[in-house]
Amino acid sequence: MTVRVKLPTVLQPFAGGSEKVAIEEVTTVGEAFTKLEQEHPALRRRLTDEQGALRRHVNVYLGNDNIRDLDGLDTKLPDGCELLVLPSVAGG
Image 1 (cartoon, one colour):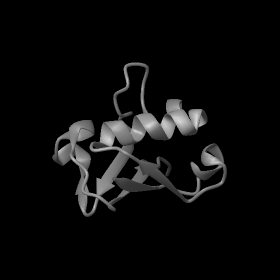
Image 2: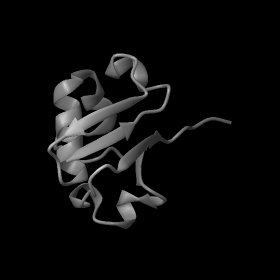
Image 3: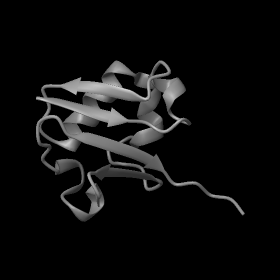
């Protein structure tokens, strides 16, 4: 199964400049993030904490749904789907 992970501009330099990264052979969001972080280690501390949990300021969408409203990192992924990663932006 192939899943595409779409990264915002701020994270693209940590993935070799790629806007979209294809991840193979995964069935859950957690597996996709594990493989993504293995292929692009610089993303690790920007997406997940030391325990492997999604950082609070990182939002991940499967379609129109935030994975936090689904099963979090255990959310099942359909083949060919796209995950959108959106870090929260603070400022005033």
